Length: 76
Image (tube, rainbow, N blue to C red):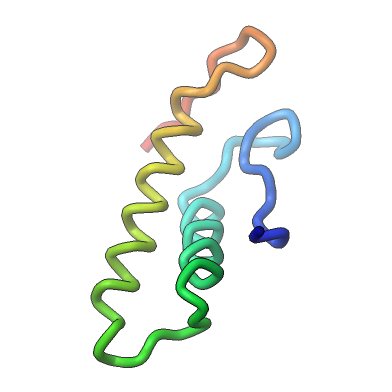
């Protein structure tokens, strides 16, 4: 699922993921799960909240991961 979402952690990504990288991945995930590329007006609010929740969870995950014994921390 979500084959177009790229890995957002070193060493796959040469630098730390940006907020834009995380948001793009969250948007792709929500699009895939919901089946909507762009939601109808009556679904926009819940769609946008889901993107923000997934982005926050992704940032938390990336901030807490340890890769090859080194802590990977994200500023922001």
